[in-house]
Image (cartoon, rainbow, N blue to C red):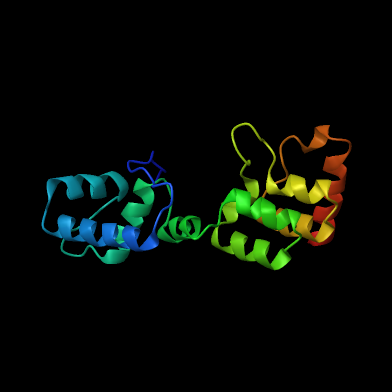
Length: 165
């Protein structure tokens, strides 16, 4: 299913228990044919049958309504698995933490830090000369698009990629 724009707005400090309650309320509303719940389910779920709709499907709809492609990715975000925290773990050379974060949210390896900061986590690993971290990040994401313009970074990344395989 094509990713749609979020229809719900995340609180500044999201609470997983509240999100679980929202999923249960959505499930109840959809099963009882509540118009608002039905519209939300139909907006984020391809073929929904109220007689077979289950909690895990309601959780998926909730995740999608917040802009995540799955409940585990929403949960990882709420648990603090963000691109900023990933970059902090990269800078600290914490291979175990980075690996755990990328297992739950592999797309973080290729996200930029923010609108004004186009660095990706791999940039920090390269700039601080952490070859094991570079290899780990490269297993989870593509080479940064601007890498060829930074003093041979493309060559160094390419060498790391070949040795990581």
